[in-house]
Length: 387
Image (cartoon, rainbow, N blue to C red; front, top):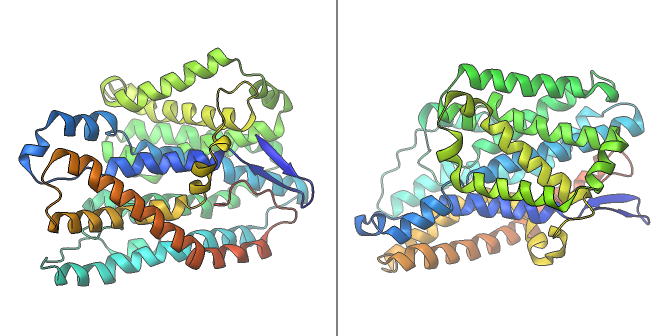
């Protein structure tokens, strides 16, 4: 639910931090369970976990996009309604303070530290990624052209680039419209995303190209616009029947496990599947924030919500930790059995990722985050600690 702190006049979506963590966890498991041993690759248990359970774990990134579109648009709509305009420079500064420090630390690691450590470990660096694409926040296009970078950690930054492109353009676009007409650019972007997918039926373009991904953020933004501009829409969310909530969650779970089999088989399904899945994700976000008849609220899971505060660090760091810890475990000889690959490596990597991310948040990211308040637009709605 949306909670208001009357003392400091701030609002907080208490159920979204937990959703963030589960988005990360989905991506984490998608990147886990790596082995070079043929006997493990042929194991039914290994294939069940890696491919059947978490083969669509990358949908966590799609969820991040929808969530970002909702939260950022909510902030911008609130600012324009309260002040009559959007302070674009202050918005960009807030985004810079949130995103850039850790992002560029990961870029530095990928292009400078990783090749050195790989050489020390006896490997030969073979980086194909172009550092200029990463410095300019267009690395998703580099990934599309060249595939996964050699440096661990760089591979996940493509989605941060897409979000930064959105953050650059979105306040500029919204500043041109009155609040009541924000739906116009949102609908245009959604339609443009579908048109792009229609004329570019290529899997990697559907997954990583800005014109495809931006539809997720526009859909999230449309949800924020409807909530803030139409009290009747918000009331309907408040009164959502439990049977509908059950159906939507069940459909989402079904899609998570069987997306490839049921949603990618035809051309028109591939064009519309992303917006369909994003609509399910938006429903979950809105249901968690506003529905009175929810079966559960993520805010009740305090530990998970607490971990949600460091989700950005978890996401940026996890691939580095997975590859490093797996290499060390392999050196010790504890990666020759299915259970070691599926359980031991994964649990160790997750725990180390959490520990490193906590340290990063406390001693590296937090000082920058504290500066953000200087560039707020007044009694700022705090949507999550990540925004």
